[in-house]
Length: 188
Image (tube, rainbow, N blue to C red):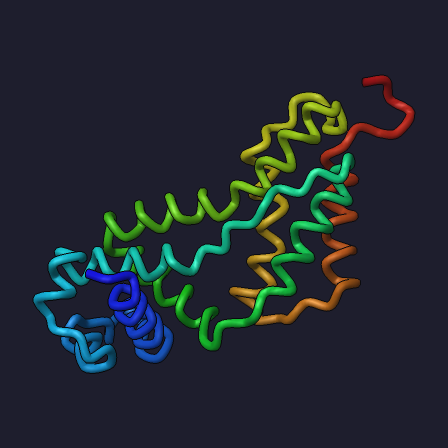
C-alpha cells in the first residue's frame, strides 16, 4: 500500500470519526469516503478497531521538548506551541466520544492510555529537566506533576469547552509552577 493510499484512508477515517464518532466508525463508510477497497484497508489494518486506534494515534502532535533553562519558560513555550496548533473541527467531540467508548472497551482504553502517555512526553521531559536543574521542590513526582499541569488545561477544554486566552494559560502555569518549585531563597 502506498503512503498516499494510507493517507487517504486515514483522512477518510478521521473525517468519519469527527463527523459520526465511534458509533458510526465503520470500514464500509471509510471505503465509501476514501474510494479504497475493503481488502486494501484490511491488508494494513486487520480490524476496524486497529484503524480506529491508528486514526487517533495519527492526531498526536510530536512536539519538541523546549529547554530554555527554566521550568516556567519551558512550559510557556510548550503550551504556546499547543495553543498555536490549528484546531481540528470536532476534535473535542471526537475525544469525548473516544473516552466514552473506552469505558466499555479495555483494548481501546489501553491504547488511549498509551497514546495519552506519548502525547504528554514533552511535559514530563520539561519536568525532568527542571528536576535536574534542582528547580522542583524535594519529593515531586514528575508523573503526578505532569497530571497536575495538564489536568486544568484538559478540563477547561474538554469538559467545560472553554477557549484559552494567553492570560488564562499564564495564570494556570504560574499557579502550577509556584506549587512545584522550591522557594527562591531555598538552597538547592
